[in-house]
Image (cartoon, rainbow, N blue to C red):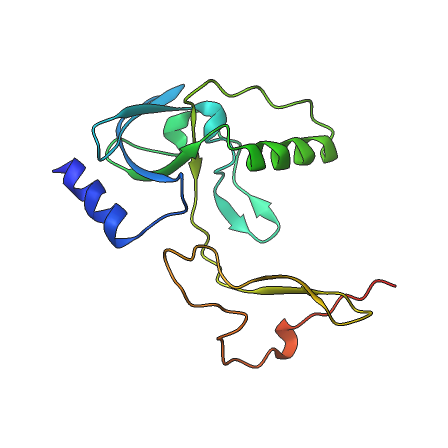
Length: 168
């Protein structure tokens, strides 16, 4: 029944390529055991969930995560991704360098990390202020989940949400 639920979720709510739904079959202090729709198994360790602190307010987060079962419980359906995604590994290295932290521990082959589909829906256009050339444009998080492009198709007035930054 659980595998069927995971299959249905994967079909009804597509994720970013590489992300997968998983069922938590056992959650403890150091790790959580997972099962996927295809019957494969995996584990989430403490390092993979430490980022998932409770939201308190815009300026505050909850206490540091000390155990995996502070974040997930047996029976939860979670979204996971490979821990060794090269783009995210580079971004994490930059973040740790900015925060004065040492290098991140190397993820084991096949290691997983907890990920989250963002609640925000928005768009971004980056333009060259000197000639008006569009340098980059993104209109959503995941094209597979929604083909609606919030940059080119939205009918809202930009108003106070439009914040031009001009660097000369």
